[in-house]
Amino acid sequence: MPTPATINVALRNTTSSNNVYAFVTGRALDNNNALFLLSSDGRTPYYPSSPSDTVQPLQRDIAIPLGAVNNTVTITVPHLAGARIYFSIDAKLQFYLNPGPALVEPSVTNPSDPNLTLNWGFCEFTYNDAQIFVNISYVDFVSIPIALALTSVNSPPQSVAGMPKSGLDSVCAQLRQQDATDSAGWSQLIVQSPSNNNKPLRALSPNTAIVRNPHLFEGYYDPYVASVYSRFTSTTLRVNTQAAFGTLAGRVSPDGSTLTIGSHAFARPSAADIFSCSTGPFVELGSVERGAIIARLAAAFNRSVLLNTDIIPDGSSSAAQYYADPRTNHYARVVHAVNDSGRGYAFPYDDVAPDGGVDQSGSVFSGDPSLLTVTVGGA
Image 1 (cartoon, rainbow, N blue to C red):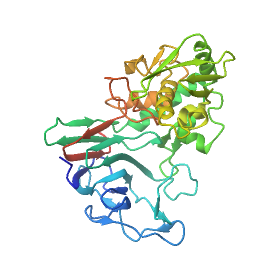
Image 2 (cartoon, rainbow, N blue to C red; image 1 turned 90 degrees about the vertical axis):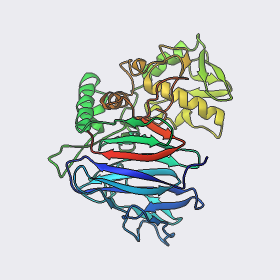
Image 3 (cartoon, helix red, strand yellow; image 1 turned 60 degrees about the vertical axis):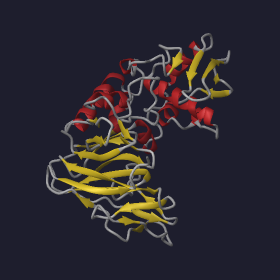
């Protein structure tokens, strides 16, 4: 049975503010993938026309007010791909249109973005004929706590607790502590609010922070990468692609410069390559097989498990084995530690897990959903 054409989403405000807004964006699967925005009434679709120039204002209000603290507003959304539910506190986010139409979304790296100093965050979802899939995303940054709960017609309920109310403060405190330990620059991920006594506004991921400062974390992973490449000059690395390609063997060239897995070569990645999972040797080059390898290899580097196992991702079957090396993605480590359930999408391939392993990405999904509840503000 295909899923219903629409689903109800309950949006609950547990912040300390009576002025919280939600914004729903995506591509309408039942309307030729047209750009979809939800009007402020939480029910009416808005399909904007293509403007004649760039960065043009929307012609409709899409800010959905959530009302007083502890209030819940229920909205209705159709089948959507690449969808997000944005939240902002105490001010409305500004969205714009480019020709296409293409949506100009809020940015935490563009110094001229009008949303730069606002307190906002989002979760991501896809709702199609087969299922709804929702996850909490920290791939770009940490800010407002968001939690998920999904009920279904016949399937058991699912939930992701997200961060507590003090989550951002805890993340920032641990990033400062890590920076005091290794002086690698983790405290530079913290963005302070100019309008709120310089209290933390958000914590950027390393990948996002490097966009603002390309020299941040330069050379950070080099010693670890060197050890990994040295190890696999004499030991075989096996990559379970968890796909039709099966498990592929890899070895490093005698000069230590290139890791070849199956027929795919990977030069030594930089810290920026590892944090992005998509640059340098991690460019897919149009190959699905290479993409499957990259996901697992990049995840293993972010989690720093490649000196402890010869097969990925299966060799590290417990999340307790992740981030154990002193040189690792400490942002991801801290994000998982602070989340109440330990689950949340902290880097681009954080959904990689061993066969039968525990999901780390903070997702809920169902083929027979009845109600999605998204809570903003933390418990």
